[in-house]
Amino acid sequence: MAVADNEMSLHLRIRDQIQEGIVTGRIRPDENGILPSQTWFAEEMGVGITTISRAVKELEKTGLVESRKRKGLILKDIPFNNSSFVRNAADMLHFGVAFQGFANISHTRNPRLIAGIESYAREANVALHMSSFPGFDSEMDIVEDLQFNTYEKHKVDGMLLLSSVSLSSYVRLQSNGIPFVMFGFSPDLQTVCHCPDAVTSMFLVMKSLLARGCRKIALFVGNYGTLDAYGNIAVYRNELGRYDIGFDPEYISDERYDSDAAIAFVQNLLDAGKQIDAIVGYDDILAAKIAKHLSSTGRSDIIIGGFGNYEDYADYVQVTIDYRYADIGYSAAKMLADMARGIKPERTKHYYDVELIERYK
Image 1 (cartoon, rainbow, N blue to C red):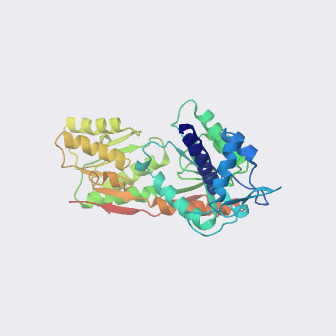
Image 2: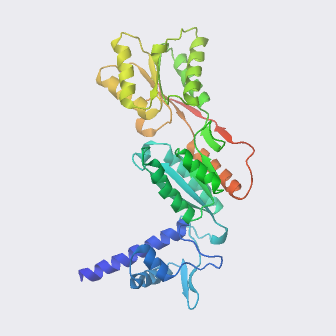
Image 3: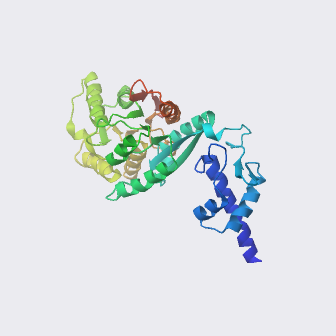
């Protein structure tokens, strides 16, 4: 009896995998709406033809496909989010969505970007193929090769790069004629970028802190060597100058993003007897870690500023920036659809308005 139960669960799991593949666009019909053969499914999924046959019979009950003699498996409707709206698979665009790591995804911008991308995909008949890659290391190119082999196999019409990839991957996309959109500014690449206005973000945070009466403001830039870092430091100095506050380089750390380095930077200032009214971190995550450290040492009087407006850290960050990532994701996906259809964007760099969030008590 246990064997029968296992067989039953296997063919139902295969049914679900095939259905998911069809809905997401990973499994595509030909121009006549005919899906791959049962033999292809058996080889692709590593199971027997009997299991595939049982899975297909279950799949037919959903109304998604129909098995016809001498033709094979015919795709009928593609449901999107339980909608009864019937979509034509032949007209569907297929986008790859690549980002770095699933770990701690709820604490990053990616869920908001993906929400916006998915919103457009539902409206515009776009199938999304999402995958992640690990952090940057010596094997990065190898990992990306595996990824992009997968995307090329499924013949995606465009790529949405939520995280940076290696230069060789950018070149590979361009050489294969695959349009793509990035979500960060790269001065070395002539690529289409959609990102929030970093300069305005820093200006709003500094303006808020200075209006609150803060004069000794420490800044952990966290992205050494980038244009955003130079821009943030320039805005920081400029806003201090508006209040006739002298610039002290010891109050700035432009080390790379690292919470231990940020905490050490702040603690060294305090140990040196420096007055600190406020601290601005690279983002809410790092800012919250600084706040927790300060609280553990009895310094809860220092105002904490960050960027990102992540709800998990609202209790630690008093002033932050909402980047409206869902809107950015939607607009970027819409532009990529135009690019996939041969419409060239008027410009490559697209910056979006941001919103200041204040939680002063």
